[in-house]
Image (cartoon, rainbow, N blue to C red; front, side, top):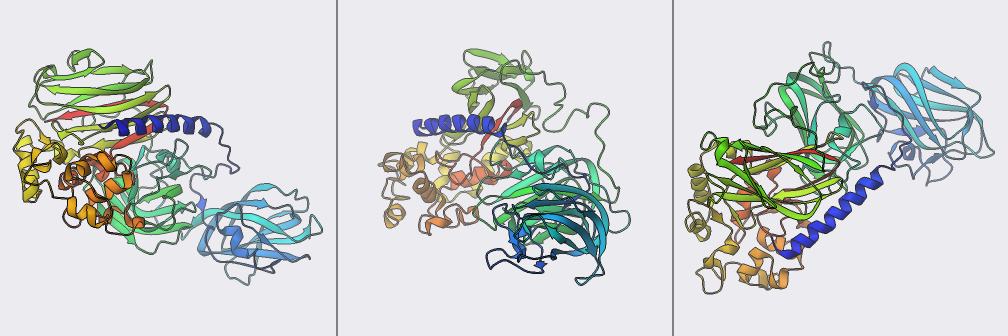
Length: 588
């Protein structure tokens, strides 16, 4: 990889470590809700008896923003109510009072906006602050009815949160099969927003992604289940367009059981019908400039209840094999190398090497990875000096792993890696299982078939050992047949550079990640705001079709096809704090 990327990765490693440290000091003011309860009031219609002014509407108390508030006129009584959109079994109410609080108030429910109201909580000794109230009641409308103010001002709430279950599912549709099950995501914003946080039954923790489209969040139910309802409890960063999908395997193929392009955030209770072991939310268009963020992701099934944790070790087998026997790391992270050559090579002929150590996985399948500033681990098939070899890259801090698979230089050996952390984070990058399953000759032929004429020679010039990237082909360099492949497009869009410099993000593009990525992806002619939209990438020539091929065959469509492929978070880079183990699959 170019030196510029190495510097970038080192900076990311420092950032990741600092993020982890910061996460340890995060304090939440929310309490743990019952596992079956979700926030059902956020973003729903709200009304009030009065408002102090136009800047303090009733809706501000149910918008999920702790910096906006409802406040009433300066008099008693006053009320605020929220329409949940359907009958709900209410189990908890959280009131975050501004300084103007209620000394005496009631929580009430009703089937209609005008009542009659049933009181499910009452006090004459309210103290303000944040009040977490356990209640029991049923209704579509929930209101706070203030009868005595605690100050000379009115009543004012930063947030009015109602937790419960809306739209009781059909008989037999119950439980939460996703509760505390293994989860993975396309990305996480930081160490404090792990995928597992959306499945922990805690309404005060959340998953959040990087600020790009698309993103996904997936849960393993442990066995094939029949789904009947999904409840998504969005943070303010919600999806405008998304699908709920099911699959028998972690990498698909996926079947869509719900789809929308008009998501409204808040709490969405979705009737679905389908079966699968894996369930994912696949976000394709964000509603805000931030990523995607879910407080809770509930999956209800006709079997009811959560899938119980296994009482014995899960069976071995499958692509990633048995992870329960991986020994604990004494250093930072335990690496296990897997032979996924489909019988082409025995374990005694699959080798790894790092920092002077060389072993077959028959001799030593594990490596206890220490902290390091930057490194590569190489993998050879057949012998320790075989031309069938490839590598992964990484920077490992005292409590964080940063690394990636890469196709920047060439494709030589199929690789995938899966990182698991102690907080439940679990994510994989690299080639898909389907790509591993096909023979090497098939992969080479698929590449040839997918390429326009200018790129077809890449599958021939170093065959059968590798497919070099276009930047490493003499045909795209000065004097080569395709030396001008990208030059006109680059000049037309104010980014003049040679074709080889564009493929290599070198020369005038060495410090212009966005420009280099836009030229490789053929989006440089679009407004810069659209340079980060994967749906627009590689839609017309000239483009880096070599990179597109590896994205199309990568887990989550994330690959390193050129040096700045991490622009808009499209690369196979993976990072997380407090790592537990790293699996590296080596294929043929």
